[in-house]
Length: 120
Length: 112
View 1 (tube, each protein chain N blue to C red):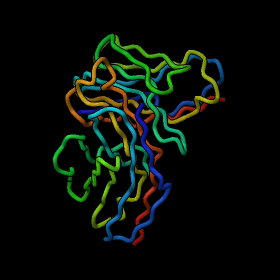
View 2 (view 1 turned 135 degrees about the horizontal axis):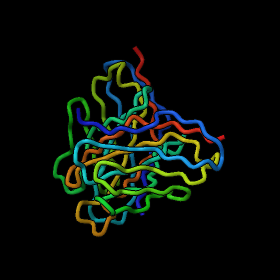
View 3 (view 1 turned 90 degrees about the horizontal axis):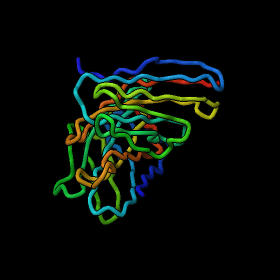
View 4 (view 1 turned 180 degrees about the vertical axis):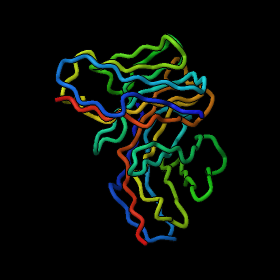
């Protein structure tokens, strides 16, 4: 079974500062995929970034980067140069790898979420 | 425009009255999934489908049914809704070999 834990219910950051949102995971699968999603107050779910467990480099997408530490089973999201529009709920999620066998590839597990507030 | 469309966006109903929340995608995606979001619990997967006529249970399937008769549609059926199914529901789709899921706008359901 897969499990995602986000231990920070809420985080505050000053505009233009960097912030790290924590995500730890547990799985017995040798390979897996990790995701981060953003949910603004309007409610939609926005995909931010993906990291495969066998990817050699940490994923980056613009101001978002994923600090992937496989041995520690952590996949923290780093947002650089925070903007007011970054205020939102952030979810970490994981999924078995493509080719996991059967239909288990479709099973996606989310964490509880972290509310980020960016102060001007 | 590529999108996942859920209907209705808001629904208030009473216990026991069967309802269906529709989900449709126009991107020819094989994979579709339903989630519910509750405060403090994040999103939990209800059912998912890898392709037409292929569905599987997520983490919280009790009280829900789904069907996938066409590639574009993946309705969520509550045969006898109960108050504990009051929640925000999301439908999502993706191509099987891609790592991005596209979410619908959500359906806020209240069961009285």
